[in-house]
Image 1 (cartoon, rainbow, N blue to C red):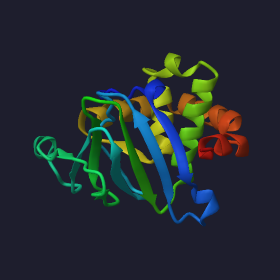
Image 2: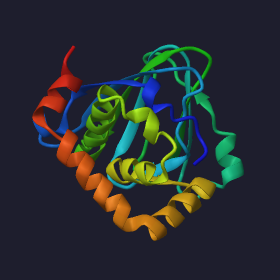
Image 3: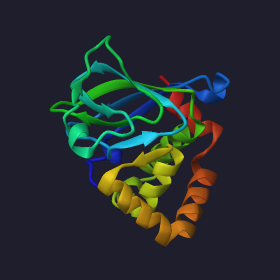
Image 4: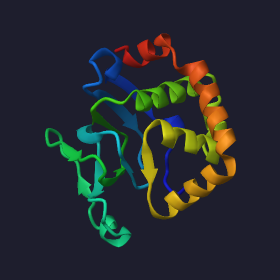
Length: 193
């Protein structure tokens, strides 16, 4: 799938967990390297608010009927103190520009699946296994499922084909990863200052 995800170069901290606030919100602080991005996508379970802390991050956004060409013209730089909220169902993509950057991401309502994805990434990174999975389409499908991310256009077609051809492998990997990494200890590590 196109995008420079760079999972192994991203640091996450959960500031507020949906498991502690009756699913009101999930608040994450992410620090990541220049050039990091994700495929254009949307979420059907939550809105997502991006707020720059430092560095340079821009966000593409558009309503659900936005064409790919129009979407590419929507790049808006984030500014400290001026959050951008992507409503539920809207297309979006963040792009880290030319410097290591830190931003806050708030999901409303909170999303345990998204938090589980962070636990999985952190656990795999700690175990030295993350870099081996960076381009594994089954792993990417698991992450997209956990985060309720629905990739668009070419990335969406690729993921749709992977889901058709490898559905059992996706479910098995998801089950195995959650069994290993979805623990109270993993959440506590991500919430530590």
